[in-house]
Image (cartoon, rainbow, N blue to C red; front, top):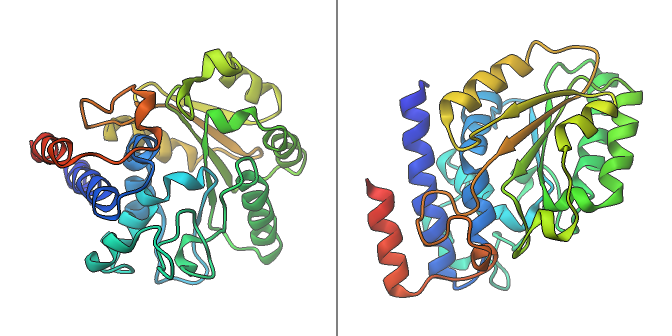
Length: 266
């Protein structure tokens, strides 16, 4: 699948994210839209859901699970008719990933800060089993405020888990507020590097060319775990949501939904 095809899949995924949240009346569009380009690469170029064993994706920032669900929809694991059941009682599409409801999400997450620990455990198990596939942990930059993340960074480096990739969705917001106003993380890349990781940076984490270059390079790094700091835009692709903390958790009105669909058709 080439770059243009991946971009087309990401554009369709954006429409589906907004539709899912609009139809169900609840969700977190901002963080789902910021990470969707990277998830598109992962699910179409790194993860074969029909294989066993296979690469794994741990959605540590579990509130952005709508992005993961639309990827599973594109891979034929979810029906389009299920979108309106998102976050409803009895639905498979829970508000945070649940392996009990949907095994293909790979990990049950929701309480921020725990996903990297889960991914580290998976990576260690793959090492023991001589499974060559990697484990990808999707982490929000606001989530980096959690101490458990930094404990896992230390442990993974100590264990030389070079089959573990931490993808930091650095969209600049911690929930509704700018990260720098909550707890400033910078220089984030230098800090992670000091913990003993390979660190790659994507200056535009919503650009598929930069994503492809970085993820392909990450395949060749050995001896240490890999962290990818991706500078993304919260709400990417929908003008009134971009860099707007109000859209961390909010449902578009009918007029806003129609505007989003028009923008995402272009």
